[in-house]
Length: 112
Length: 110
Image 1: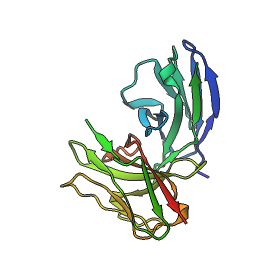
Image 2: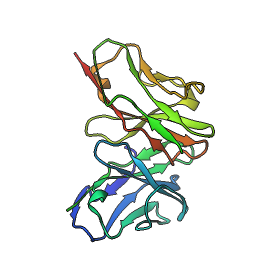
Image 3: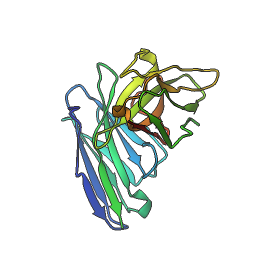
């Protein structure tokens, strides 16, 4: 058990809507990163948060945004959903003491 | 720009055969290389990273900076090795900002 849980596991939205995905981790995991995994592709880095501040971002537009909270939980928000946003969204948290990255099981988003 | 290439989508071998999953990378600095594995219905997990020089579940990987490769090898494949394998890189000290390859599915038949 890695202690990284994501919700919801599956959801369906329509174009133009907004979605919030959630991730919770554990003490000692102060860095959280989010990845998008399209079908047949490897995970693609979206952004990273450390102690509630964004400190790294991949090649994703501003409509992808995030928050990190003091209780080791975080959110990924996507506005103005597009069909291409359909993917598995992975949360990953970094163990401060070992530097190992632990992934959640993901939230599968379908945009119709 | 950093890039990870895994040329094979699928690698199918028989139990007991040697396995080599290929990974090539491009990066302007000194990256750290990783192999992640995803077994059926399980989450992505770290298999090994080059800096630790460990052998995990019989797998090894050597970083070849001249050839910019980090191939994953195992001398004798087992059925339980069947999984999706992803090669990934990060800049040193940036372990959570990974660039992944597209992955190779390894199927080990009895």
